[in-house]
Image 1 (cartoon, one colour):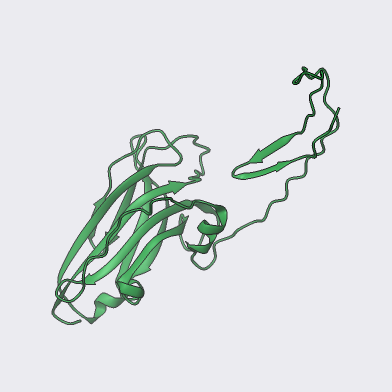
Image 2 (image 1 turned 135 degrees about the vertical axis):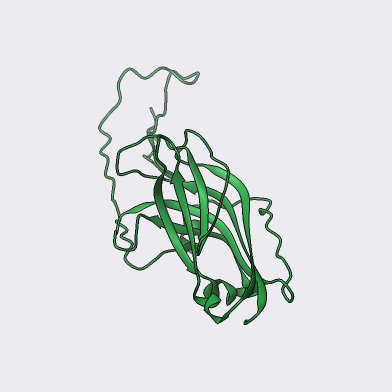
Length: 212
């Protein structure tokens, strides 16, 4: 690619389950992309753990050399609340890997955010589009959302990109439902026919329906 011009585009959709080592309940996050000494950022979304930006940042890199393929694209989420900005977590791509993707484009990918490659703790998840394009040869892809966005756990896992060393823990939640008392009458027959529904995140479970 010696002497050619390239563009790097990152579209920030949203972040989920952002965490802090200081037990902060709310953030004022922005999305940040850095390539070498060049840095671009999204707007700041105030007071949220699940920001939605729907915003793109673009880099034009003229006259690049062969080292371009190994250049790191660092994508991060930064908390701007307080006097000093604090990086919640980040993820690294290299230009060559993105360019080798179909149409040089990774769409609707969730990336795992970590403080650094040395730390196992996952600090949240970021949904992005990212592409690397030769300005003379490659067409720009469309970045629009699908009509119906699939945010199921299965879809997120299918589109999740993780880095080596990230630690995930499977959690089992067990709940014993014993009895309920003094329930109001809910139908003409004077019964309630109750059941118990439990929700944890996007997981839903319920007991059998008890006919009275």
